[in-house]
Image (cartoon, rainbow, N blue to C red; front, top):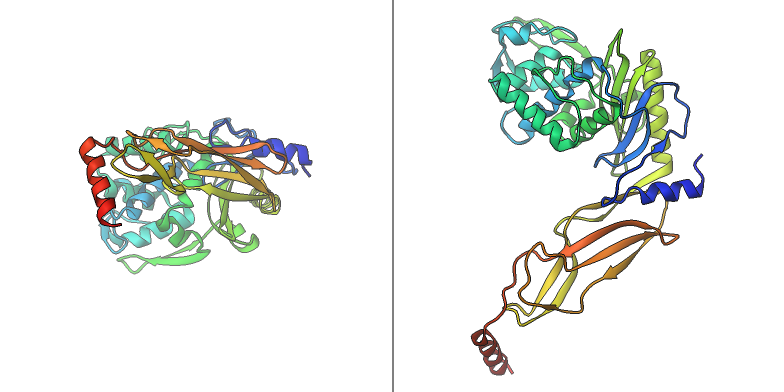
Amino acid sequence: MCGNKTVIIFCLCLCLLFPITALSLPVEIGGVAACVMDAGGAVLMEQEAQKAVDTAGLMRLPALLCVCEAADRGELELTQRLRVSEAAAAVGGPTAFLTTGEEILAGDLYKSAVMIMAGDAIFALSEAVLSSDEAFVESVNARLAALGVAGRCTDRMGTKTQLSAADVALLGAALSQSGTFLTYSGMYYDTIVHDSGLVTEMASANKLLKSCSGCNGGATGSSDTAGYCGVYMATREGTTYICAVLGAANAKERAQAAKTLLEYAFATFQTEQLARRGEVIVGDVPVENGVENACDLIAAADVRVVLPQNGAYSEKSDIPVSLTAPVRAGEVLGNVTYLDADGGILAKVELTVREDIAASSWRDRLSRVVRSFLHM
C-alpha cells in the first residue's frame, strides 16, 4: 500500500495547473501496460502507459467515439434505417454479419458496435455520419488531438493505428461520457434481427460487467501480435474510473488485471470537483466608478482533484475587497487555492467576471445619486 507521503505527493501532482505525474502501479498485475484515470482524464496509476503499440480491435475506438458523439449531438437518430454499403459489409474481425444493401436500424448498429466492437457496424455508422472517407478521418483525428491522444488514423477503422495505454484510457474516458455509448455498454447479451430474418446473437467480451461492481462499459480486442487488450469503466457513488490494459497473455489475465486496478482505485481514492467553470465563487464584490455597483467573481476553469479516501482539504482566498472599473471579462481578478490536510497545494482556480463592466460617466454617477435620493 502507498505510504502517506507518497499519497500527498500524488495529490500535489493532480492540480490542473501543473503537470500530472501518476503513481506506478501499487499492485502486482504482471507485465501488461496499464493506465487508470478518472472520467476527466486525471491519471491515478500507470505502468508502461506511454508506449504506443498495436491494440488489435481497440484501433476502432476513435471511430466508435466519433459515431457515438454524433448521435449524442442529434446528428444521427437511433430510429433511422440505414442501408449497408458494400465497403461496410466487407469489414472483417468481430462483425454483426451485415450484408450489402440490407437496411437496418441505426440503434441496432450502435448496439453491435458497442457490445462487440463490430467493425461492419462501426463502418456503416461512420458512413452515415460523414460519407467522405477523407472528411471522417479528418474529424476523427481532430477529436484525437483535442483529447490529447498521440495516435492518428489514416482510414475509417484506424487500421495500423498504434495507441498507448494512456491513449486508450483517454478514449475510454470520453466514451464514458457519451449517452449513446452508455445506452448499450452495460449489455452482456442481446440480439439484432436482419431484414432477411437472420438473427445475430451478441455476447460482450467484457467479463467485468458481471464480476466488478459498478462496471458499466468497456471494449476489448485481441490478436497474436497485440495480445489481449481492453478498456473498462466503472462508476460507484458518482465517481467513474477507467482502466486500460494492453498486452495481457489471455482474456482471464486481462479481466483480472483490470478488476484489480479498479478495485484498488475505488478503495484508495476519491474524486472531488472543487470548482466548475462559470460557478460563482464570491458574490457582490463592490465595483468603484462602474456602471454596475457590484459583481460576482466566477471560476475561470473547472478544478478537480483526486484525494485519498476521506481526505480533507481547505481553501485560501486571494480576493480583492473591491474592483475599479473598467473590468474586463476574462481578466484575472483573484484566486482561490485549495490545500490538503498538511497545507500542500492541491489546486488553484483563477477568478474573473462573466461580462465586461464599463467605467461610469459623470451622467451615470449623477443619475445614480438622483435615483438614490428619490428612493430615500
